[in-house]
Amino acid sequence: MKQSNIFAAALTISAMLLGAGSALAGDIMVKNAWSRASAGMANAGAAFMEIHNMGKTDDKLVSASSNISAKGELHTHKMDGDIMKMRRVDFIPVAAGGSTELKPGSYHVMFMGLKNKLIEGESFPLTLTFEKAGNVNLTVKVMSPGSMGGMGNMKHGKMEKMGNMNKGQGNKKKMH
Ligand SMILES: [Cu+2]
Image (tube, rainbow, N blue to C red; front, side):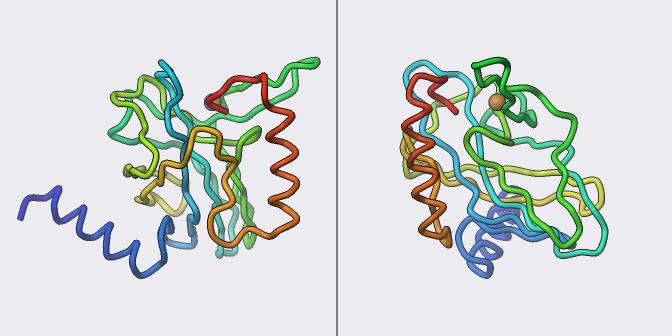
């Protein structure tokens, strides 16, 4: 068995144990990782997820990488006057005993220089590196181009709020 096959098998087994889209390392648990299918000629993509810190010390997501793109960056969105702009950040904080949600219009993992289009229904591997917990290997599910998430255990009220957000985002950049 090649190294890469062993790695893939380990990923599959941990995905089965934790439920789809979940991964665990140290005190960090990542849930509901998803991305959007590429629209048009976009050569960048973004991934969103929930990061839970079950430990007693604050942690930080410091980098992200995947074989789907030349580069992975950590981004957030900030209002610049009336315009929502993306900005690169050095890290994404995850407080002790808390969680941070990476979602459209907020924190996200950005893939620069996509090697292939992201296709709805497919999935790809992602490695997140945390300052304390180290590497977390997970699988990101590709949703439809207009998706705002809502996989798994999202509450109803939150879905409605996200639906409204979606309308408001109509003329902003498609990939976010
Ligand atoms: Cu971005």
